[in-house]
Image (cartoon, rainbow, N blue to C red):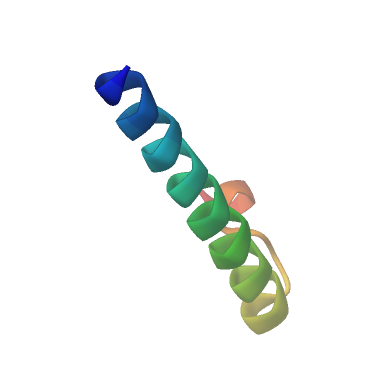
Length: 37
């Protein structure tokens, strides 16, 4: 249970960071980062 809890927490944190990063990239560059790769 501990490993699955840690995995869920890591997934949640990474998802929040990814959304915030994409929003910041959208507002600063006008084009999402994942489209520029």
